[in-house]
Image (cartoon, rainbow, N blue to C red):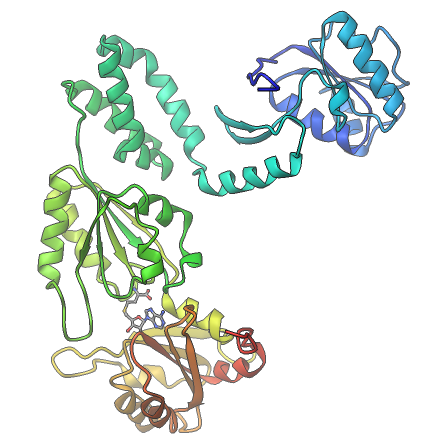
Length: 464
Ligand code: SAH
């Protein structure tokens, strides 16, 4: 190990920055965030630094550095654009035993500043020993994306309970188990989702009831997996996929998305093709309750958004009735996916002022659509589950007054590499769909916005 990592408490500590440019500005921001009492030495300052000096946040000596400026400082950063000055600052600090860093000059650094991810009080620091700062920054952006933003709040909450947990649970091993259960389970998830009061309440009751065994309270996460392309998952969805004990998924959830579920999670296919449900809805609802009661973290993974033609509402009504904690995570609904990936904006100032999502699914052998409502020429209509019924749908729209020449498109397997888009009119689309053998999942988009695809379909010229 070339450098010893540590976290330094700089609150109210005198710190010096030599220099007044952009680099000094960045370092000043960091030191200020850590509560340091900051002095700048530089003949001139960039505007934001000057402003902070004016408000009294920093002290400033408007001149070049002199030996002796370092006296009494905890930490000094040399950030001038003159290598000689920086080296002289370094030498003076070394002689006085003061921590010193000359920016971008590893030979003149007693300490180096890592790339950091700030979820205060949780802070991650990454260093490459001054070898490849770019690598540290790349890693940082990956970790930034991976680490939920709520971790800071969770750490603060845990910190505020530390003493009370210690008083209640004398045995260190028992305490560790308690914290492991808390930081991995539904309590943490609540805090990460922003419900701190709920998390605190749950923490308190879990602590009071704690009997040494990891308290197992299950929870159900109803998660939208988007239209199929794994790049379109939300961070929250991905995180829950990697935490679940058991996953219930249906046929809209694509294989590459299932790949991202935790390896040892149990997977249960609950199907859902138009007429051939692998599990009746009632049984799915009941299974969710049962699994959660066993203390499991249950992920109900659904295509698109769980609250758009996904029966998500029905599934959680049952959970709510059974008193099981649950959370709903939105997903990109397939209409949004198909729209973007086919270059068909659903609204457009010149074409459509509103958009309606309807289902073409039959119930008791009837499509229950309010046809007269769907005939406005300034409205886009998106039909989910409509492929099988497309001749009937187009016929009815025409019969109720939409022009046969109204542009219409079908987008099959939207956002996936196999996506196919056909463009036609209400009069031609049924024939085109039959001829091309389009199969679900596919969406039908009707309205004048469809004509924009000719110019806006950014995927058209791809090699794939
Ligand atoms: N909750 C889902 C919809 C479920 S209903 C959502 O928000 O998208 C199932 C219908 O969604 C399918 O019949 C099809 O019309 C549509 N659908 C889902 N994924 C699709 C995809 N990748 N491409 C096209 N249509 C899709």
